[in-house]
Length: 119
Image 1 (tube, rainbow, N blue to C red):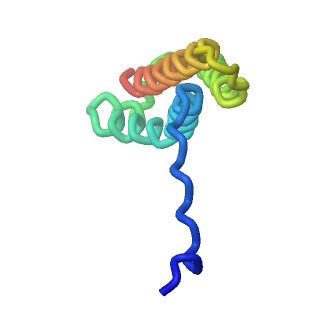
Image 2 (cartoon, rainbow, N blue to C red):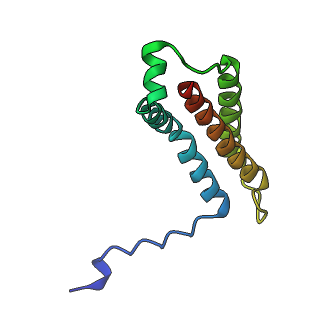
């Protein structure tokens, strides 16, 4: 058997850069907002105050603009975290700040949703 007929082995994949890891984390954080919102609603409806909110109309008073503001901040931070170019050999501080802003805005949004059902 001739070894020249075998295809060459693929080159090893390079290790992901910190900027790429941040981008991947931001992508998953943004995509998991919808399932997290559904989970918060289901958990809130499983409580006595949550079912009372639906059946008796005793829901909390959360202004609608607060939902929109937190979602706008989350979307802006998500786009910034995903589209910031990689600078050579420098830490991605802008992307890191955008990721933490995204996580904070999502946590605030989920807290507002849970607060609405808690009455």
